[in-house]
Image (cartoon, rainbow, N blue to C red; front, top):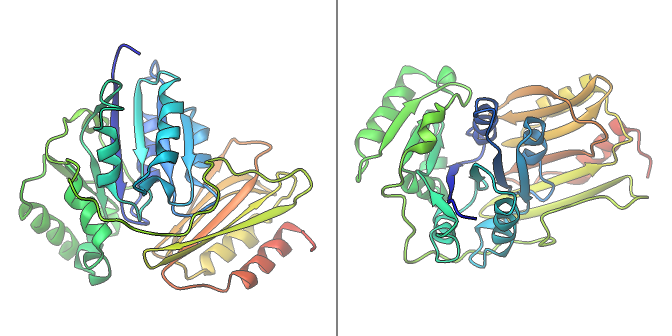
Length: 328
């Protein structure tokens, strides 16, 4: 490789709209460019990559929250695999519970500086969360915003005037000042923001160690030929996740699945599912469910639930199996 690949980290807490933002960027990228996306999720199943694969980008997933670990082996494997395909741009989406400073430290290391041109780190925030102690008291939430060069206040259409004032006050008080900030709806990030140079989003010389459960270190997760479904759990940093993967031959009733996801009180629900009406991506955050149809075929359905409380996974699994027509 003779040219460095322009690279951006897009960070933000759970449910802030990172995936939606990246999907919008992919839809608006120059037609002659090939973009790559490295997706890291706290859950073990991997939902975001399935949503993005419909946009024709090069996708690599690191499920299970592994990318934020100090060793960084799964992240390096994923980055190397994407760089070998010579993309015109690389976007990295760490988990909403991740440590952006470690990702920056890796990308600015001697290993990657000959190949990666790290541009501004973009931090997404829901302005409503800036007045909520649940978020402002969370170290990762604060680290993500502190590390970002660019701050995007997303979901402004769901905010009150008080929320907008809180966002503007917060941005004004930042030292050092943020390079750029903007309020947007539905992740409509101006594509020009990706070319802003990195200024103060540097890696700290000290990165706090952290521990969480790991499943398999391999980023790919598939079903065995005779296995109708599989379940994976993860926990760490005060959050629990449980995900299910279902064989491509199973179809869910769209209406029943939508009702189930709408009724779940979890903080985060994501799914890409084959239904009787086609393949759909479901996204639930703050009690709001969005649905988008995908053109995927022969795809293994997957659903992931994340919450700060341990939920009755066995009960939920029984409901999902019934919806899929799977008998134990």
